[in-house]
Length: 75
View: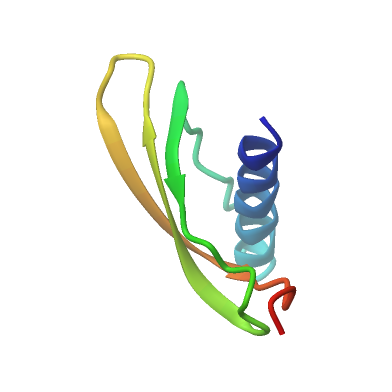
C-alpha cells in the first residue's frame, strides 16, 4: 500500500510540475486495481525514468513510464 501511495504521489507531483507551463493541463486519471511492479530508483541520485506496471479494474495490464527523483539511499 505504501508503494502504491508513493507512486500515486510521484505521478501527481510529476503531472503538476509538467502542468506549470500550461495551467489548463490536468493529470490523467488512472484506474489502478493492483500494482505489479515499480522500477527501483533507490540508488539513483538524479531524476530518472521509472516504470510502473499495473492492472486496471477490467483486468487489463498497463505500463506507465514517468520521471522520478531517486532517493540516493544506496550511495
